[in-house]
Amino acid sequence: MDAGTRAMRGAVDAPPIKAIFFDFDGVLTTDRTGSLTTARHLARTAGVDVDVVRAALATHNEALTLGHLRYADIWPEFCATIGRQLALDALEAAFASTPLNGPMLRLARSLRPSFRVGIITDNKAERIDTLRRLHALDEWFEPIVVSAEVGHDKRGPAIFEYALQRARVAATQAVFIDNQADNLIVPAAMGMRTILHDDSRHDMQALIGNLERCGVLVAGVP
Image (cartoon, rainbow, N blue to C red):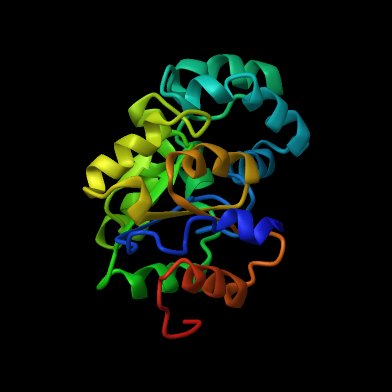
């Protein structure tokens, strides 16, 4: 069984799809991770090497992603580690620098009249709050489920169970799209149909083909 077949297992004789969930970074954005986006902008602002910034943030990544800490809690240590004093509001511009994937967003919006279309993301609360306001994401995605807000990430079922409950659908009625194969293990085991999106190519035709094999009819590439 090839990877594409495994990713869409259960599509035959399964309940019709009612909800489609997108990962955020690497799917709805063109950067593979949000950590990369944030570090790159902060490095330019501070005038230091991006690897220095990434390492300083990585120390706190899990706590920030699970909502145990917020950026204000780690900012003095972060600044000391990179050897620069940055204002905390430098983060706002870093978050705003996120490059959105226009064709993917248009695809998601085109599905909205027929399906519940949501986001499930391992992410920091402040970052997604900024991007929700900046890009009016709540007009197009419901629910938007963020690990830092629910205290769980994609390594376990709780974040997916919460998203399904919010969307009022069963696991077998949902598709989840992510750019990292490890993030598809848990939802597939729960009965969700899963699609691995290659963020190095962002092949919309391939994604649409995978959606259609899950029973999601798409008019064409937006």
